[in-house]
Length: 228
Image (cartoon, rainbow, N blue to C red; front, side, top):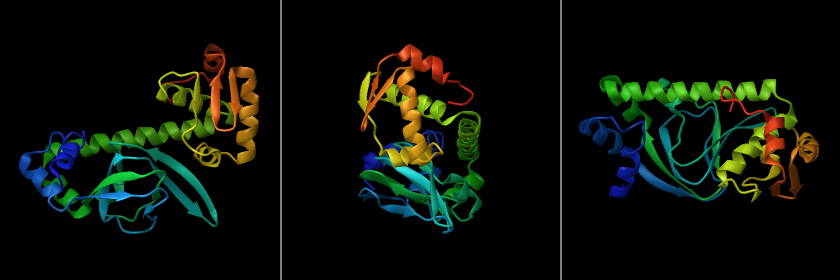
């Protein structure tokens, strides 16, 4: 790999405290690869051969069963997947694909496990990363089970509002059918939820969102740090 890619890995919290010797062992078999949009990266049920580190782009983690499919997570730069399968040497429980052109670093799982066994600082970092993933999963479950579809999309739009620099007018980064599956609803439910938000400070025009009354939207969404 080029030195800048090595530096990008080193800067990640997961690798920041690893000793130089351990870091060399981790990156000696790693390589960088660019992927086009909609490229399938891993498939649920396959062995976890690599830990993937997202350097640029956007990755969708999804699962399917009996012809049905659902989005589980959206990952961006500095995110990794799938650490639990890598450490446990178990099959992937999710699939992954790119939503846009993406660059990833792929580190052999056997190297991750070998360093995990002997480097206590790396082991602590892995525990911290897995704990963060667990808490994220719990928050996601609470969002799906405790909120109505309109409340879920309201909080999603608040996050998008801040992600777009607190601009009152912004375009959704993803197609609506993908947002619907990510938020656990059908396209029809998503359309009804968007329509309901007209009374709560939001206008929708195709893929463009206009926040007409931020205070009203916040009052309806009631964002909660124990969920969001």
